[in-house]
Length: 359
Image (cartoon, rainbow, N blue to C red):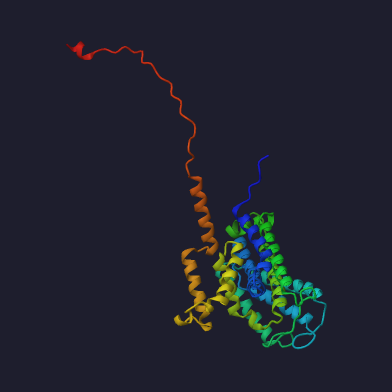
């Protein structure tokens, strides 16, 4: 029986998962509970942009809005004082409500934009994000610009940041495996066909708008999970959490990691969070004008360098280097260790002296 070969991509994911699982044992409290937890949350949200872009050909700017809808739903359901509806429900019941609300909104928004493509779909989702920002800012019965504070996670995670870290890790791994599994299903293959040639898929009898709507709803569900973990981790949410700056930051994260690679969502989030937290503490950084107010400029320069070096982001650089190494290895000549055997030949053809014959 031929042994199953594990791809390099799968092996790297397994090693990274094991390393992240062991990180709380060896990592510092700040690095684990802030840097990596924030990375997992942002990567989870950015993976929905990568899913829609690489599977369906739809680049969405509404994903952080959907995460914010889940967060605001949790805040209104759980909080017992302050702004919002102050329903005081059980946190786990609030999770179910948040998932249902976010998925429903995603399906509605996806249906509205299911016939738009390219730049028109991008601008439509940007409009969703702007509308959502002002709704949460101006409708004081559900939030207001001051936001909702004092949102506590369920008792199992309350005052246990490491448990919340593992929750973010498990949800991220489940979303990653789920998106990869969808690609091998008939639904995922249909989405890829729609991405490549929607007119032909429609001519073959596939309901293109319906498939796009369902894909947007699935991405909204995962974005809602990111929003739930985010408000548990942050303890509060306000409209600035879903403003245009946050929306573009999520797109930048996807571009940094590689918008055509699922793994790039978390890789880009890690680069973004690390740069945000450690870049300003490097020696002599303040001497060259890199301050907190200019962080977005630094991120823009980093994105520019990465895009020029590799349009597919950091994952494009990694996969390209891996392919070159594999190609070079496959071309390495194998030395021949067997001794060549030669058989002596006897020339039985008589030879004549042409010189003497000419004489």
